[in-house]
Length: 96
Image (tube, rainbow, N blue to C red):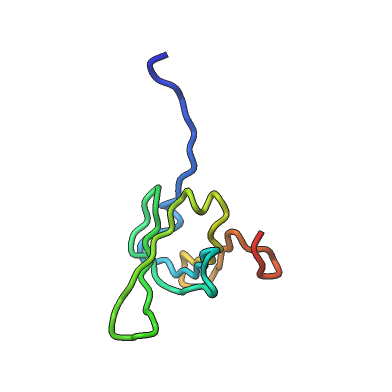
């Protein structure tokens, strides 16, 4: 066939939108960072955060491929902290 039906893993851009509050920790980091989602596409979440030097803004990106591989622990709230959703984190706070 010239075309095939394929499924792929994508970020839910209806749930993770601009302004979503987020905490994320990459497996190579000592501690997580909190921030606000600047942009969410099907392939990447871009997060703005304030580093220790408070007069600058910085960002990090969370690729969907690394989320799927388990490289990230994430907590996010699409509704101003009324509900917090965890991804890649067990009930005891450790990684899956």
